[in-house]
Length: 168
Image (cartoon, rainbow, N blue to C red):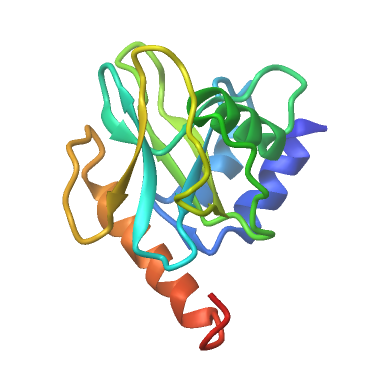
């Protein structure tokens, strides 16, 4: 069942924001749609992040809504493929679980963030009028979710610290 996968990944997530786990426990009592996923794609040197230019939200990680019957990991891979042309291999543990409003007409939504490491030499594709681009983690990018910049930087620093020297 999809909700079981969501709960399991929310419990495994390394980071929690916005009281997401408590929100999830309460939200499980009613239908939970939409459910959102995104992929924090970094390069092997952990110096860049891959973002997509959304028409309303600005530069954001590739992601979107989990379709009915679709698991969150499968949705994250699908959304990344649709928006960047990349079919990433997700790292085993989800990076984060958060609650936010993605649209003014949506109630607060649970979002699971997954991670992938991809070389910057891999050709990018994606959707028309929503280009993907690599951003240096030392720079700022315009986004309706400015808190994501520091969250993604923290994630990249943790990944870099966990890699053996020369293992990049």
